Length: 106
Length: 185
Image (tube, rainbow over the protein chains, first blue to last red):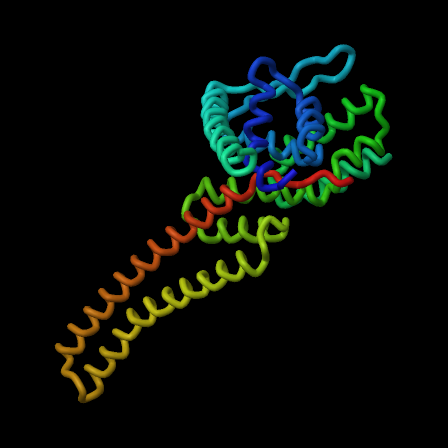
């Protein structure tokens, strides 16, 4: 996948994954990596940046029979940002689809 | 063993960062190995999944630098560090980004130097007024005052330019530095 495409939507996707439930880092990293061909290792810096920017808060929770895991929770600010990103994405993808229909699939 | 090596290496690479933050970052990678083990994956798999620790360290350091430069907005030193971190990570083309950046930095330094030179030239005028014959002492002191004023004005102007340049560069960096490393294979 085109790197320039990917750059813009990674934030959107990782925020979207946490919209309904809090997730732990490994889960997010592996899911993102499987969908977008990013290295698992670079998802953690992304999570870190989004936390610093105030879109995620983190907490530790015991897992079944293991040491605690760090969970990422979407903050209200993160939720607002996600909605904004989704709106932008919709406008963008609709515009691209229209142009493809007009130019290629006529 | 692989786990210890990997984490140890990463820990050393993150040396420029305060220890508290470093521990916070490391936690994610320690947890990664732990969860992978719980899911029955080997340490080799977990490590190769994460990718090269040097790349991870660079990404983390870049985030940190951009963040630091953002806190003290308009600081050209911090912005320069962020630019170098970004270039070393290969986010930008060395020639097309670092080149203009260094060139503009050079222009700013030259402007600073000329502001200082104009202000200092007042000393020479005073010297001429006191010991030379071109101007009288009173004329010389007026010229000197005007030169000092001019130097200060130029200084204020260049100061503003420097800050504006730092802010612009930072915005450009933030815009460009999202995680973009592609998985190998």
